[in-house]
Length: 339
Length: 274
Image 1 (tube, helix red, strand yellow):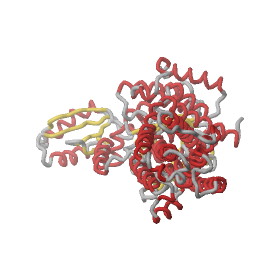
Image 2 (cartoon, helix red, strand yellow):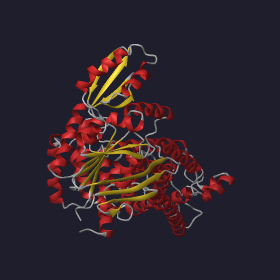
Image 3 (cartoon, chains in turn cyan, yellow):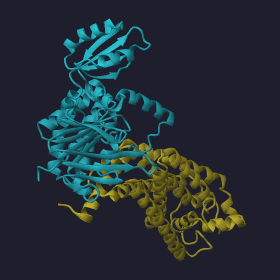
């Protein structure tokens, strides 16, 4: 039984009443004890998938089961065993931190003695013991986030769903939350399903992740294996003469034996090579012979953004900017449900 | 292990307690909700002071001020009902509702806990109005006297709450449809004032213009206010009606209305969950 995947999704689709195809045939599995992530830009279908799995949203077609239970037919049994924390923080601002935890715990019908002990434990764990009796509305962003995470853990779930958990947090609080999540996964063996559009977050936390864009999974694997697909290092080059240099250089270096791939960079080209240190002198020589003058060279190991770029032809950052611009024109409508 | 009905009642109670905690933490919201009705009460009581003496029978032999008390009570609840819908929208927008929905809590306990909380708030508002009216009455030439004592006051409050339940449910329904606090508040206000002005709230039905009499006799507010008058101001408060049948009819009409709007609220809440 325990060898079964804890989440099993097969050919899942979701079409909203307005015709939006948010999820278009997604399949994946999550093993018990894993830290699994969905990486993709906003609107890629991450939140929709998570809402189907936490039984808040119906699917259009396909299979989706958690703990081997169908999300529609056994919604209640699933709810008892999962925890949830999202970017939109689910706290009652009028209640104190302790009251928020007690309320949540009582809805799981935890015995009072057990619940009280658990509340104190979580308050201490999340560094909130000193502020437990202040209204949650008076908390700072980081404190609210930690309290929200604690409410999702009150009933000791076997599986925790995190929907964009660190969006809107400052770097310090983000790093703090990461530590909590790593501890929960590594030390307590909690299975975690996380969605994020931060590459460094997925890279640091996830054992395995799926890259999702426009409702489809486009790549899946451990962060290391995904990056390894690209090869060793990324050499980014820009040129002094802007017109035509990129195209000429790309065509030229593509044929070199040590070059794995060439992609379009921000202003120049990104050359993916096995061993950057050895490749750079050779690249400079070849380009120099053809009269292509390099303005700037930098070498990095590949990031997940490079992976995203390889599969989609555009970067997550660029996608974010485009979407922000589009949504700002569409008007900000917080009362509409986020998908 | 808690199961079925027991779990449902327990969860409703837990969420009801949450509403109560918020209410007691912000008593100022209650005081503010009373300011406008009390001003109405004092102002109208003065403006129409002499009217009642021209035709004492039509006003049940009471001062206009006392005649007007049930109207103010109902008005307070009408405006108070708007808050029910707004509370739900706030929970949706804050993400709190989603958090509740990921727990195994019975979905209807969420709605019921909130509506029970709103009814408690309305009872409190109603009781305070009755008390303030009585106190204000002591300063006037003709004192306010509730003919049927505390049982009469409680029965009148019961009528008001039945109406309040219908309106709060209607408001939840509107809120779930619009998903927007401003629209919900606008629609609530848009409904409330015409309902009050085409009823027996300001004048007995028999003294209204003919066309308005027809409207008023179809307006549930008229039934609610007339019944409350009978309960608070005595059997002769509404001279053209028999107290017993009037109250029975009122309870039936308001009960039907509450059932209808509550069904609408429950259905739209269910639908909003998927």
